[in-house]
Length: 156
View 1 (cartoon, rainbow, N blue to C red):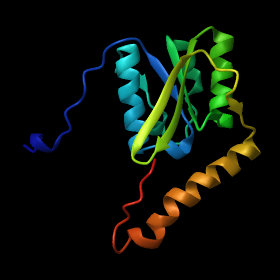
View 2 (view 1 turned 135 degrees about the vertical axis):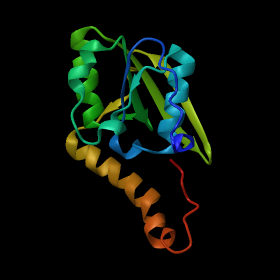
View 3 (view 1 turned 180 degrees about the horizontal axis):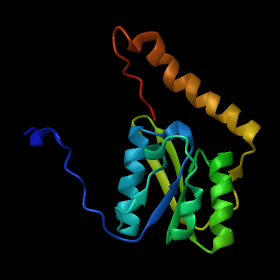
């Protein structure tokens, strides 16, 4: 009856890819761009997107994956990403690193096979500090202005 309101599902194709990213990228336009990059580089739309599972642990699905794509904003792995990369390496899953940054409205990225030596592996405490940087810069503007006027500052 209301079929026009249903979202058209994208055809799932290609190898199973496990995406691991910091939680502050969940449901952002950067996450959408990451999925487009994965589709371009690995020719796959068969991606486990962690934001669809909320805060539930999905690391048990890494063993099913052909590839793990680890996202490193500003060259840093959050503690969650570190844990999942280590699991993938132990299981022999092929790892790709997606180094990302923003230059204004433009997403700048570097796709690397394996894990580059210069990627910083953050501890849980360092991850909290790193996340605060994003929360403060990205979301404080929304809280101050977003409810009444709408926020235009959406870097990530």
